Image (cartoon, rainbow, N blue to C red; front, side, top):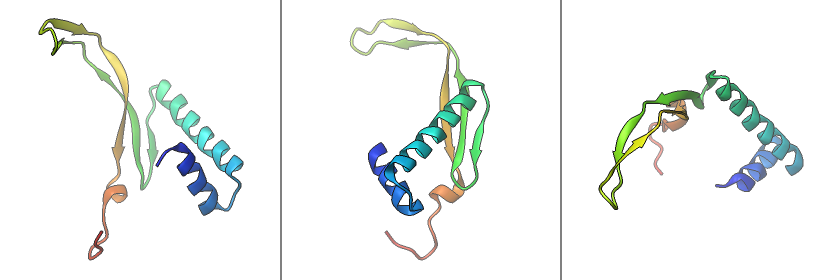
Length: 94
């Protein structure tokens, strides 16, 4: 599923226009991005938690040349799905 498919699904399930669904999805993503940029967590019960983690500086190896390369420390976004998101109902088969 890509962004367009998601917008179509939101519009259908919420009974709104595709334009309204696109605006809602864009606002949601922007709000999550803003909070992560502030270093805050975003928890959506039944879906998961978005957070920012810092990766330490490290030394890596270039597989083509075999030379060592220094990789700088950086902050990255992390998503941890809730148990309810990935849990399957008992007795239900795919």
